[in-house]
Image (cartoon, rainbow, N blue to C red; front, top):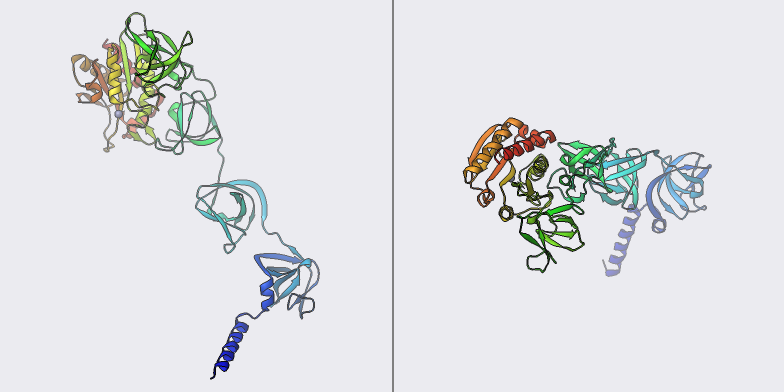
Length: 494
Ligand SMILES: [Zn+2]
């Protein structure tokens, strides 16, 4: 074949191929638009034509009220198939059929990541992906496809991945102290916010001492230990408060000595006054927020900073009564033992507060930490006790073991007969008051009792890793028993 014949042959083959692959007019295929398959109903008797023109061949007559589907139109001509014939009808005689049903607006949660589609079909365009556990609401569905709006886009999702959210009746609780609202029912859950003391929260559900609550527009989890049922205000005792802004504190130092009121939260900053034992001060920021210093205001209006070591929530006596330093273990970023959403840090503070409440008026006392969001180092704890004329130092802890059968209370001392006596007095009462297995009084080389000069004991109330002990440790009634045991143990040895 010569060159021209070759080109002509190729063109002929191409034309044949086009005719086979595209049996319809290429012109309308180029001018029309494809859209989501839609069902229509004919509003009159109308003609099905071979092309998008009134002059094209009439293929059939379609009666009024016939259902037709189309996903392609050229101008006002819709391509439809009727009685096995495919052709075009005029859109002015078609009305869209809305399938699906409207129902009472319902909230669902997605059980998996799922596609939001333009229409109620898996072949329709995907608008976006909705993440798992997203709350979405719908009031219209077409078969198992639910119409929803997410991120400003409205479309359809498959009902197979939706779970109806039932709104449980809520119960009002009041926070007994400042506590953390977390994203998950565990102390390692992301901190969403800190709820102040004495706030009413709505509890949505409870699971092993964690309440799912709504507060300040946020939903999260809080520990039940710091909630009281109802909307009544808890007694406004200093020990019940955890955000100490506005609280009264007192200078705790030996009679005749003074502490500095400083211009900044640093021992290097200038002194504006010297404050004596028992001087009342009003806290002007939350305690422990300023690295070991508390911002305060004196009765005569002077503002400054005092080292936290020398401040107590409990008014000291003028005569020198015994001084007790209570040391709730851990704190802040250090939760101590954690099991089933319970943290040693939180329980030991709750117990220490109760001990303080029981001892108040009988002795002078202070705590190494008053809140759960502050971690004094072991050195800080001993230094605080050593800076004061401390009579007894009691560090409160909770055990944990990988052996879940390990249970019971134990009390440790490092040196001196006074420490041993105190340990025995506390240990004996922990076992009798709270029915703890007796793991005895023992020597231990723990920094906090080794470096403290006063007779010092580290009491382990029980095992958070043991289910029977854990139930007691989480129980407010048993926390009171532990507190009473420690209180009576201290008082018995003074
Ligand atoms: Zn501990």
